[in-house]
Length: 114
Length: 112
Image 1 (cartoon, rainbow over the protein chains, first blue to last red):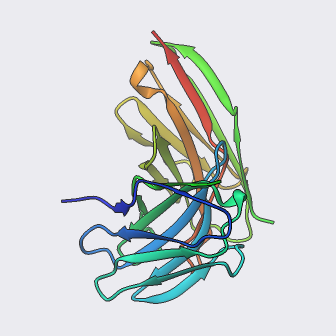
Image 2 (cartoon, each protein chain N blue to C red):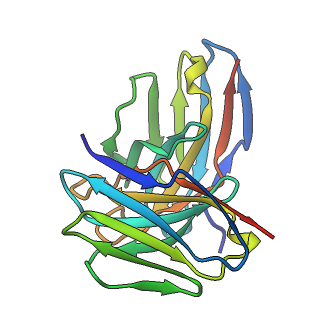
């Protein structure tokens, strides 16, 4: 079975631009979470979606938004990019995002903002 | 504020050594504690711990949780160069959200 997949693998943008990152969960998983990992830090929670509904949101500005599609894939959108948005963006999927439900991570998208 | 603190932040050992990585936490709600290994990009799942005092083992890796003292340790015996990675500790806060709070990680380098 394929694991969590993310696209693109790398992305270079300039300040003020918009970016869309994509994630496909493991087959059968209905929950997707997004994390931002800045160099030298642990991942920081951005969003969780389950059955196309937002279940949780971390401490990120409104420039960050996400959605989940009927096939459970997900997009993360970031508007008005800032230099500080440069990071590895990780997507994790789980069966339902509930108790004892392990999250499995994709390879990430490396975003560089110039 | 919920926080997870890992120590040491980095560690250099030689093949065959045994290492212990530490993770302490202060959170409002606790559902489970997880350990991940991150080599290049994707963190790969190692262990999920929910109960105190029950050791989980996988080959040369083992981990245990102390919910009274709010910490966990990850042990790696007979280290190999392939164990070189960043080891991340995360706490699942539970509730309706499935988010994890991560520590900064411990960077382990195993020299031949």
